[in-house]
Length: 144
Image (cartoon, rainbow, N blue to C red; front, top):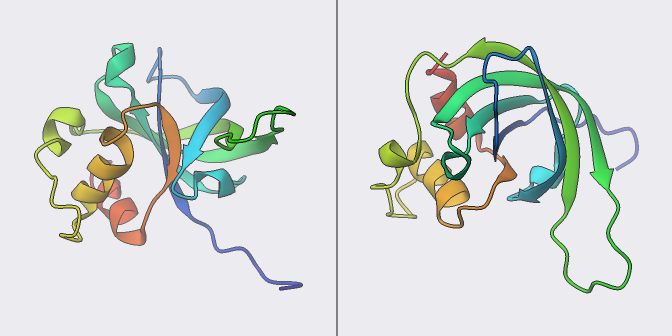
């Protein structure tokens, strides 16, 4: 559609975050799933410090200041889309939300935002950028 305005979306990233207090976060060549490949400058992002990397779940939220699609490697048939992003932190989480809080929520059809987060982050526990529903974004917003 020519001239269409892209609707701003909310995303979440689960990755190694060494300094949750940092003003800016740079993530290079991050795996994307669940529409995460559409992340763009101006989008809201919720940052989860990966528990497999020593983190504790939700730590901050911010705004994407730069996003760049990483080119696929020639000759490899199946590749997960990857994106490099820079995020400016806008707030620190005030409450805990991580794997231990989300793991019990496994009724994938219950429609709860917490279940969506468990499914997208912990069903396949790799670090990644994921697109969020409006309900999941609103739920995460209550942690700030």
